[in-house]
Image (cartoon, rainbow, N blue to C red):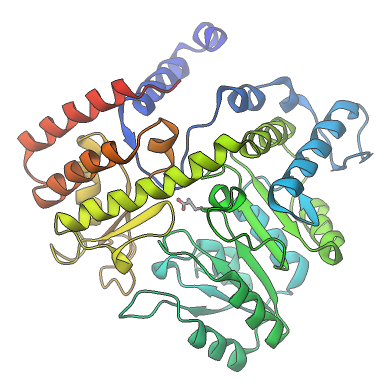
Length: 411
Ligand code: DSN
């Protein structure tokens, strides 16, 4: 960061401090990851100087000879990675990608189904405060109150009754695998488009650790920066028959010029994800999450659905008190463990003071941590949760976290 240091010492000092923070904490926010130096270089490159409205070899601006090649490589690699008939690598992130899908298939006021945010969905799956819930009519489905699992019979029942134009599957805080095939079947039965939002699990899907919905699902959306470990960005994949609708909805429907620097970062990340090592990485993410879950439950901590199939865990703090999520997340942050407060299904405390904690293993796994480390980390998390006001304990855990981070450096 030599040039930044010289040009703007104020921003430089914050960036340098953020780098230190990322190195010296256990980052357990399940939607974050640490990208490779190659992806970082691409995102900070001269490609950001270019405008490229249009698609490869069909642009509205001159000078796109090299950008055309880069975007085409990104498209080809995405198709290979997920076995997709068609891929659009231009969505700036997950939300604009999903917005483009709405634009492609729904008119304002049309009905669609999405997983309730408090049960693990996403803002763009129909939250009242999001474009999806304001412009379109959301019919929500939840999880079973007892098992906290998706109930496919119930989802089918709602779909048959409501006849939505689109059904969204996918998660931001559901720790179990999703039967995307069942969603596709239900959508076909009621004549709806099925959008599978695999943003959180894309890396696990690409490596075959979780089921890949791309070959049989109408449209699949994802971000590229979570378990997939690429740059901030989005990606849409669909059956060939929807390719034109999707492309037109992304540009000129939703967006102007793509961010070519991030497109290059996506291409590099897809190449990394096609390597055999990425399979090992993905397997380890899930192994780590399972060990972490077992350790926490062994310490008497309640987990939503009593475990995990993917990269994330949702801790239910209600046995300790309603609405404790943020307070405990702050205590954990002080102890050097970064996660986020999150609603749990049927949380009476509301989204501003939720009763849960969401955490995951993608970053720790990127740093090379395995089962042994997860047992330690799980024990520290449980200690802080059970005694979150104890400043001495928080200080002791902070030191242990620092020591562990020193053994697993990154950047
Ligand atoms: N903000 C992302 C997450 O944390 O799950 C979803 O967009």
